[in-house]
Image (cartoon, rainbow, N blue to C red; front, side, top):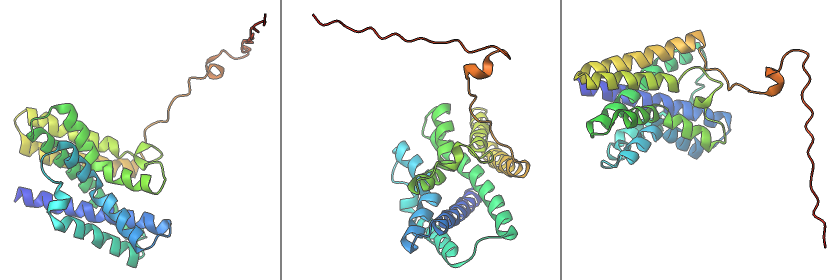
Length: 229
């Protein structure tokens, strides 16, 4: 029952992120092949990267045909229907948040179950959750949204993975799976609702740090010329 619930959430996330990939294809005015490609990248990319790095059998997306079919279904929905409006946005937010928590949890637990440490588990749990969206953005020559200018997303996956890791080492993997999924999903929804964002990089410029009224020092560069004999 527990495994089936995770599979449903997993496939729901594939479907939702595939639709998001199709929406990007619509914005870029791509043809049906472009819709399918971005939907597959968005919905399956993170899991394929995780399974490839773990080198423990073929990626699940290649052994279970329902994953690819679900992603193609999301591409068809984005191609045919005007996936816009308040109802769509709320539905996407909830399902995407649940998928993020689920993907982070599954990626983290799968890494830990193969005997790897907490740091690879944290890394692969986060990659599972956000890798597909990053691949999608890179393929359309955009800076991935997880790198800034957006509400917290990768940070939610990191926190969810950390909860799973702590519960795993405490001997409570089932509790960790439920808690990680819930924490990641709730944090993602609240971050979108409250518009939480990480700050931009600090510009450590001398002109900013100098005292008011203080002039910048003049720098003189002398170039020594070699005399030819």
